[in-house]
Image 1: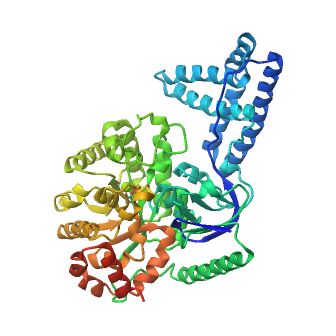
Image 2: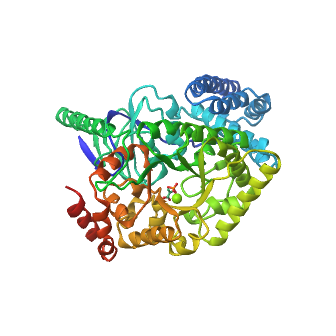
Image 3: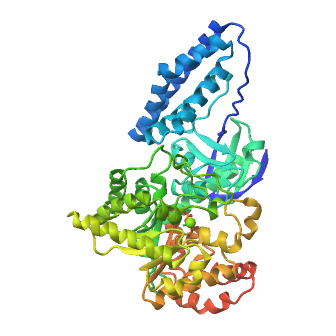
Length: 571
Ligand code: PEP
Ligand code: MG
């Protein structure tokens, strides 16, 4: 038995066998074929195995993930039957007397670069299909296993160096009981998704992949950030006990699901949820969310190989708005970049992706993408209470430009006879320090602010939110952050606007008394944090929290703030 410590990224306890999710190393070497006919037969066999595998994956995808995802694998199957690809490989084996994997790799590389250089989206997608399929066939030829998380059919804990948000989205909740990664922090997007999927997770353990073998029994304790490898019987019993206690606590919180969120002195604050897909709305309502405070629309663009159409987006937005039945829904326009990549946009690699061409910067440049999304949103606006917010706003000029484009699309739609709501609030994320500092100026032009502390902290402290080595600098309670948050809330209130927070800090029990004291109006968090937050807020007095505001803002260090909160508000 041994133990790893990491960052508890999603609460709960999972006990199951380890399933290692790794990108296989596929090294293809050129070799002379001893018998070219046998080499061709080996190639046929690898194709046949890949087809059987893909059929299974396609069926599974159709059942679990819908037709869209299943179509990707149908396209892969077509490639595997295409004589235009298969024949040149066999010719190459024959005429150049080489091994099958080498012949396949050379042929496929040639097609991939040919299709990629074409100025045609359809052909570019085919290049991606060929690359994927080739990887699968080569793995069979080399006898290397390709992991496939969507096909897991027994209870497991996933072990990975890192998980991309789209890997996470594909995890099957029925079987994936928890996960642990070497890298990442509480605010990396796989952690955020784990919370919304209610999968216990510990990230940033540094050594999960180097110390956990496939099939070993593992305990993931997302409450304390521990991972126990090969636990003893006594340890298992202790964790089963801890899990039961946690489940009881959850049952207590569940009683608050239909209660209003009011403090001890009868002050209401709004508890909203962050969502990534329309499916998450169910969890918001089950957890008593009063609104959606952040809909991260970029997940609609991920895990696929082309941009979603206006119609697909319209359906997604309409579904969220109608399911929320008139409760507020803050939809954030596309925030791609940082740890959220869209491979099919083929953007050049950047030295500093979190500081690069992303979010609103990309939308203002690639206006077709932006306008399509805005049209879909505007058309859906009549189905509920829509608020639109722009991410990563750094200057007033960016906000003005984005708003002007939104109003242009609205006018065009109305001119064409489409119905668009007239009460859509337009706001911004405050996640760049320049915007927090200029909040008084912004407050005159926006309808609301939503403070994105996940990024605001990383930009203010210059500490990458994904990098566990600098996680000591990632300090939500640093007075520098609290002062910026306070500036934003005060600026909003001065202009009669509201200020919310949709960074992970909003659901953090240590931060909640501070944010209440700073006057925050809306707290938006993972759905599973709503009921614990409601329970906590019921026991706090807003008047008392406000009375400590100046004292807290004049403190010198994070440690000072944390001990103050613990002594004053935590009993
Ligand atoms: C944030 O930065 O706080 C935020 C909510 O956005 P994201 O986590 O998607 O970057
Ligand atoms: Mg952000």
